[in-house]
Amino acid sequence: MLKTLLLTGAAGGVGKAIRPLLREIAEKVVLSDMVDIADLASHETFVKCDLSIREEVDAAVAGVDGIIHLGGISVERPFELILKGNIEGVYNLYEAARHNGQPRIIFASSNHTIGFHRRDEKLDGNSSVRPDTLYGVSKCFGENLASFYFDKFGQETLSVRIGSLTAKPQNSRMLATWLSAQDFVSLCARGFEAPRLGNAVVYGASDNFESWWDNSHAAFLGWKPRDSSAKWRAEILAEAGKEDPTDPAHIYQGGGFTKLRHPADG
Ligand SMILES: NC(=O)c1ccc[n+]([C@@H]2O[C@H](COP(=O)([O-])OP(=O)(O)OC[C@H]3O[C@@H](n4cnc5c(N)ncnc54)[C@H](O)[C@@H]3O)[C@@H](O)[C@H]2O)c1
Image 1 (cartoon, rainbow, N blue to C red):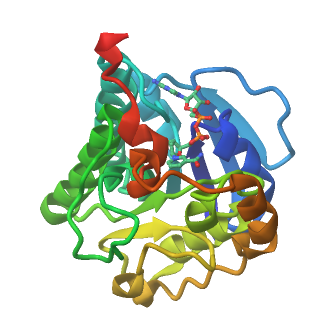
Image 2 (cartoon, helix red, strand yellow):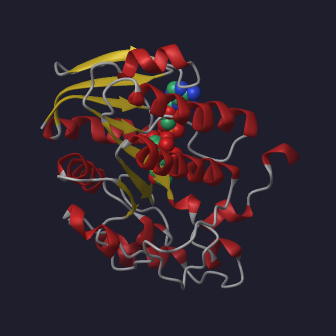
């Protein structure tokens, strides 16, 4: 059990979904975001922090013994925004960690680091990155920064390539990519509890019937997802109808992100 966990990006969708479950991991939770959060539970405090401002990140990280880093840009956006939130932001976080006792970091990476792999490929720990957006490229930067900070400074990180963390799967792609909030939190717990974490990258999906990802390289974590998209499978497949097999959104793992225009092209 951690004494104090920092949750960045706590005002976002994933932050809201996992907050009620974080008592399993930590006695106290410091929530942080660039927007205010008012509805604090008794074990929660709030620190306002723009990840692109180093001093604010330092203040958020000071005194914590674990970090779940959700903060930043979570979809394709103009590069200037991605630069602030996901490049400068993750650098500031690792520098703050380096100067504040190196608390373990769970980094919310993304399936969009590997989005241009086809759906008929099974990916594992040796698969190359194939980002599908500038956003995906920024998550590759975060994973690489984690690797560098481990090899150089011993900072431990679990990067989770989150599939789709939503209340329930919303389309046929999410039958493979869906990750329940509870399974994500149990994965974070394993990341904090593992005797030796090092720098690990795992695919974040529940125990779904459809599966594109093999996490056997991370078996040492002992993570067993309990939830599954299967209970919505019949309903979703009935609604999905016949998908166009030539549509890149159905060919590639990154789905519709593979078809997005460059943000500078409007
Ligand atoms: N939701 C998913 O299915 C999914 C899938 C893959 C990866 N992820 C990753 O998980 C994390 C959380 O996702 P989400 O869906 O909750 O995203 P979200 O956009 O709902 O929340 C992100 C939060 O980060 C904050 N933020 C943005 N820029 C910031 C900055 N410069 N400084 C401080 N705070 C900043 C925002 O205010 C927001 O509250 C993101 O890093 C995202 O890339 C999510």
